[in-house]
Amino acid sequence: MSQHNSFKSGTSASSSKRSVLKRFERIDLLKKRGQWDGKKIVGLRKTKPDA
Image (cartoon, rainbow, N blue to C red):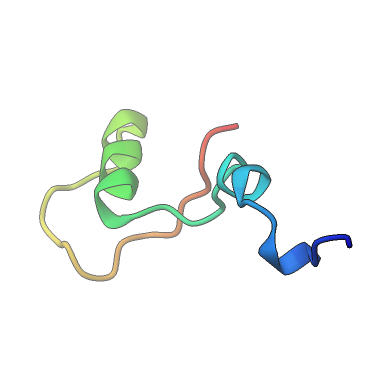
């Protein structure tokens, strides 16, 4: 009997690139780009991860 797709291991899903960054990743990326003013933590500008 074959296994349903939802029960297969998540190796392909976990190895895919995330499209959403966590807060500390966004701050690091903004610092690297020189766009971090260091004042506000809430309301960070939108960023796209580096390819």
